Image 1 (tube, rainbow, N blue to C red):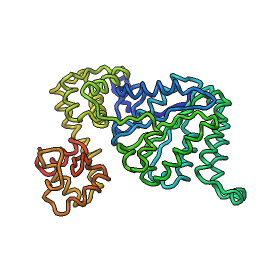
Image 2: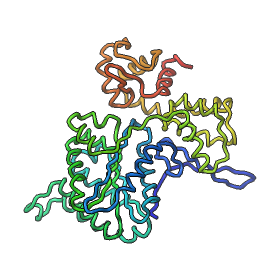
Image 3: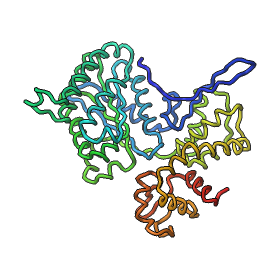
Image 4: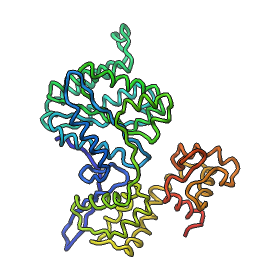
Length: 407
């Protein structure tokens, strides 16, 4: 099987002069290894059902899935789990590729298309027999398809649009895959909101391409992740995209029970001899509000501690160090992108007793005009019309500490 890279920390401990390596399954900055994935059962079940019914037919009718949510909520981890499940369910019949999008690659449909083609070629996943069948042909396919987008004598005679290039490239890719025995291909676009922000018309083009592919016999499932509110940000696109992505989920923070699973399942799967007391799990849930990023941040450092059990009294001592590390590795960086005026607003909002506030609660001149920018920088969240909150309670506490209101 093609190697999939996941990130975890390996700690080397020494017992009687013998090095013992312990894998740390928690990482706040990288997707969760599918082996350690926990929760999101409804989403995984929907994907499993969609994949099983996405069988080759005269006119394929694949499902398209959208996973939406705020930063750090686990969207990419869901895609990685989808990829792993596809190999388990379909085995030698399935081909998948995760395409990583960004602001630069989404400035035009041409750059967007090239990114898709290159990531399909370099990051696809399949079982070993399939890889040996399609590896060479896929390289030739990439070079040919990208070559179409370059200015050439042929193109001067018959100009090709980037939309046509991508559609034709996917049709020819399917011919390669079908000849190799593939019955389902899954294209996963991670962070599609960048296309919505940089080139909104590209969403129309993308929808048109994938809606038209079945008439060529292509059986592509399209999975995409995006920011919460993607379908409502551009009003005229909301309904068409809503129909196109017939399976949609918005990821929410974990409940207390889900937080427990997110902590205990990776520890068990990684075979770590560590017991986390239930009141510690409750404390972690209260601190993080069930946010996966902060759960992993805290658990990463707990697993690094040489102990086999963490009681509440132990956790409170450990958390003092974690809080300091979190401030240095996360919150300092967050604040560095804010102007002095924006920092003043953040500090004033942090001192308010309530989590949610309105512009009138801030006794700062012209504060209202800076709130949209702070939301764009993801330091504030617009919770309702005319209402805002600091993006996470832990960041609010950090800002309070800088003001001297929290010791």
